[in-house]
Amino acid sequence: MIHFNVPPFIPTAFEYMKDAVDSHKICGDGKYTKLCNEWIENNLSVHKALLTTSGSTALDMAALLCNVKAGDEVILPSFTFSSTANAFALRGAKLVFVDVRPDTMNIDETKIEEAITEKTKVIVPVHYAGVACEMDTIMELAERYNLFVVEDAAQAITSTYKGRYCGTIGDFGCYSFHETKNLSMGEGGAILINNDRFDYLAEIYREKGTNRTAFFRGQVAKYNWVEYGDSYLQSDLNAAYLWAQLEEIEKIQQDRMKTWNLYWNEFLPFAEKWNIELPTIPNGCEHNAHMFYIKCNSLEQRTRFIKYMKDNDVLCVFHYVPLHSAPAGLKYGRFAGEDKYTTNDSDRLVRLPLYYNMDPKDVDIIIKKVKEFFSGEETRR
Ligand SMILES: *Cc1c(COP(=O)(O)O)cnc(C)c1O
Image 1: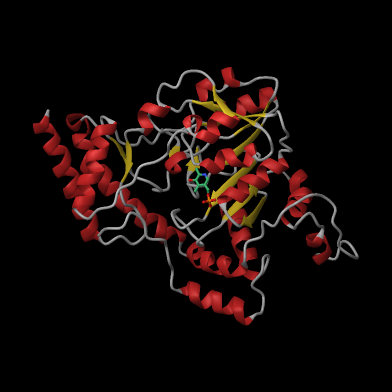
Image 2: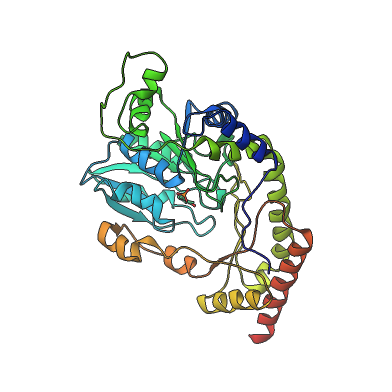
């Protein structure tokens, strides 16, 4: 069976995890947490990065820092993971879903302005498949209407938009290091903060509402409960596992890119003939080979494709059920404008296996089976 995903592992991780254990410091903000935070700040050029327990809790922290309150409105795509919406629904916000562009499956930046009302507080672009949203337009709107921008960059570490790293452009950026992402620590994430005016509150919200971080720095004589907060600190054991990957990040990303390009080069010449769509990488965007997907010509064809691949021992998956049509989406949100692509295109999208260190023989098998399936479709028509 060819797996859909195998989490990345770099062998030095065990050495680093042992080092953390031997140092008797495995809770948050230890040596490896600091190495990871500083790596992100220095290599991706952002004011502050803090590891969190997940991409979801990074988004939760961002929603807290934006001071989202009951009745505020938040603009986001409906074609995304539930976590994008949860962070804001938890604060009592109303979710306003906007359609996606069919070429990237990212929020359609030309449809955002008509969704803005007096209650709008935040825009949440999701860099789907590690391909950047049209950030110039989004940042310009945010400035004009005085809105926060929280980038859901869960899938987009090292991806760039006009030379700037995804997650470092808005007020806040959120990465995920879940086992399905390019870099992983099992469960984990990071919040990126662009402006030092949020440093104080960020430190407090993540430390159970206390000023313990300032206490450790010797800035206060004792620490106190000063605000509400939660526990967003990642364990240093997990950070040690991640650190091994940050040291090898180029190797990991290049390896994924090799597989992505193989798929692309093998299928692109047939896309028109097979009547399928492949991902588009807009000018000015460099992606991180997070995902390779195909859009079949119908839901019915996608169902048969997934079954065909499974019968041939290749696991392919689809996502997402659009949030606006899901039970919680109906409760907490509304769709602004026309759903031209969200439902139709999500029904047709299927992802191929893509992970670090794939066996080239497996990649060959996948390519062969995809070609077999769609060639068979031609004779079916
Ligand atoms: C993975 C993902 C998340 C959530 O990350 P977790 O680390 O699993 O909590 C949020 N948004 C998007 C777009 C994701 O792909």
